[in-house]
Length: 564
Image 1 (tube, rainbow, N blue to C red):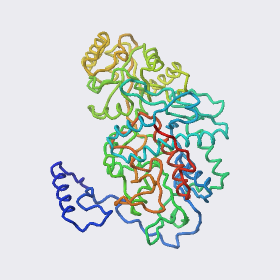
Image 2: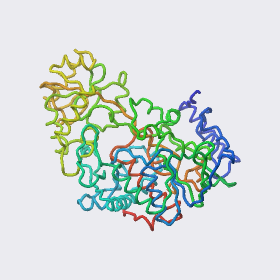
Image 3: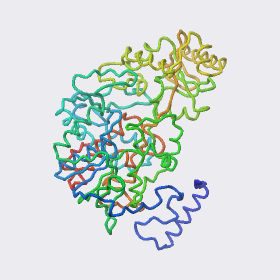
């Protein structure tokens, strides 16, 4: 299949022609998009083929309900519980054997926890920065909707967790630099009396894995029917194209679920569908690794079902991908070199930016290089509010605890054992273990040390307080591995949280929330100024979708924060 490309001149020519035709009074109907204004089509994608008809004899059971939710993740559980609390009868279907979750950083503004800690969040400033990061290529109404509603949705989750002896705190490891700054908006849950140590990615009872069982218990109490191992297969639509339910299950044993009020897609992203990534986010294909649990269950099934029912994906090309240095060594803010042993960037940036810039280096290879003073350097930087962020500050660094040296040493020891970090007594030996040219690497380190001594980064403008020299052995080099966590673009939607068609009209009865929904992030890059934004919108929009699908009023059910 060949990708259709349009030159700038060709685009301008076609746009002017379409504009002239519209001004001349073409026969386009109100609400329709003239053909010449539509994005070029590439034929051959699997979702462009009509869904095969399911024979009536394959449907063995029929269930009648008010709301159906597809997906047992954070967004799906929030949607199902919110709908049930509005008085709706709810069925939730999930293709795997149970609920799933990853990570646990959840963004919220001005929650009760933040207020208790005396942390005032400027929500308007955050929204403006998110819009600027995405270059306006989103539906800004969704960002303001999130800003107004996320605090109350976090308080809702905190109340649910509290009923099950599960606590919440704020993450202290966020990035605090003057030019790149993250906001203290990141909440995470943990079980009562749990150890908050996080060594080499191993933790117990911390994050969404602590929160999800609380939601599941509340769903059961609310009478929600949980149908695990039941994949959604096809939407049911009436003569007006309204979605009235779905068919779920497996061949020769399908269940038809009729939904009187609505169906909610809450299936997460499409990161394990390589065809969809090729179509909507080709840069994501450069990532070295992928982390998703359950493994590769995020295959875009409901996205495809929605497109076959008349929905479309969000309009901006190259959907945002959440790509972090998850599968490699901690990056910190030390010297970064490529496969040629050369420095290539200002290391004073977030993990997303490092992942993306690394991919542009020869063979996509990069290392972080440091010496025996590394723990003192990082602790001084993180605890001194100079830097931080993921794979710099620690994953589950509770508010007020500081950067834990012993935990990080234990993690590094495991990284050395796994080959993610190499260690040597000399720079010559280190370069050999890294597989980079020895003399070029030594020249890079010499230059870096000269800049550190000078107190000014003439080459890349790095802050002098982060220019830590590399002088005393043993010396270390950690392999940076870009890791796709989630695709952060999805189905075309608006503040009604309906899936929209090619003419921006809602498909009645079909809602979408969480990572399956689009129009929230701009093109290409996932903004990291609010660590946990994907989980934050899963919780917030999941709850809002549940209320709306059940026929409730979100402004009556969910408090709005006044944004000044």
